[in-house]
Image 1 (tube, protein in one colour):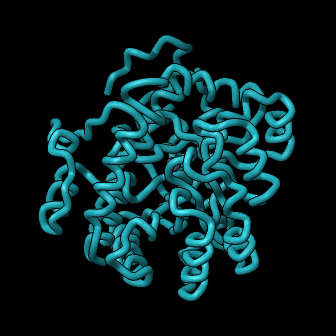
Image 2: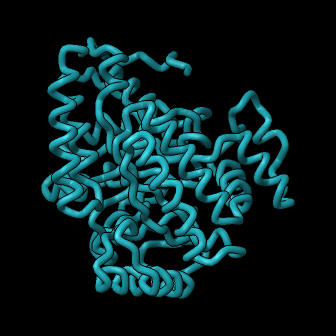
Length: 348
Ligand SMILES: [Zn+2]
C-alpha cells in the first residue's frame, strides 16, 4: 500500500512482529468486508446494480468521497440476499483477517439493509461462516447488529425487538451506524433502553463527521459501553478530558476515509487521542471497501506513532479488553494473547 504518508516518527518494530501481534478488532462492518470479485458475483446473481467503475478497478473499490463510498457500500450490502451469501462473506473475511494476526473480531451488520432476508436467516449464515473460520484458523468472532440511523428511531425499536426475540450467545450488543448526518443519537434512546434491559452491550458511531455534542448524546442519552470514532470530542477539551478519565473504549479507525482525503487529519486525531489519554483501539472499519486490513493499520500506526514493544502490546490487549465478549471468553483469549505476546517478543 501507499506509504508516502510516513512523515512522522518511525518505529524500530519489524513487520514480521507486527503481523504476528495478536489483534482484536472491534469496529468492522460485514458489508465492508466483501471483496470486489465476490461483490460483483453476488450482485450479478441477485440482479443488483453496482456501479461498474466501483468494483472493477484492479480488485479495489473506487469512490470519490464518503457519500459515494456509502452508496457503494449500500449496493454491496444489497447484494447479500441469502444465508449462504452471509456465510461466505463472514468466512472469507475472517480468514483474510486471521492471516494478519486477527484473533478476535466483532462484526457490525445492518439487518435493515437486507429486507429480503429475515434476521434469523442472516444470523444463521453469519454464525455458520464464523464457526467454519474458527474451526479452520482459530479466529473467534462475535456479532453486533447495528441500527441504520437513516431509518429513524421507530424502526430501530422494531429491530431491537427482533434481535431480542432471537437471542444468541454470539450476538453480544447493538451498534448505530450509517450516515451520521441522518440521525442524531438522541433519536435512538428507546431502542438503546430496550437493548440494555435485555443485557446487550451498547456501542454507537458518533463524532466521525459531526459535532462534540453528538458524542455527548451517545454518552449521556444512549449510555454506550463503547464509542465508535469519536474524533469530534477532541474539539471540546472538557469532553475529551471526560473520555480520558472514564477510559471508555473508543473504537477508532486508523485509515478511515482512506485513500482519497483526510488521512493526515485522522492520523493527527489519533496522535491527539493518545496525547489526551483516551483508551482507544485501532480498527479497519471496512477493510475490503477502504483497502487496508487491520495489520496494515497496525503497520502504519506503529510507524506514525513511533511505537515501542510496550505500545504494541498495549494496543493488542486494549482491543481485547474493549470487546463485548463474555468474561470466560475474554479470560481465555487474554491468556492466549499474553502467551503469544511473550513468544513473539524476540521478533520485534
Ligand atoms: Zn464504522
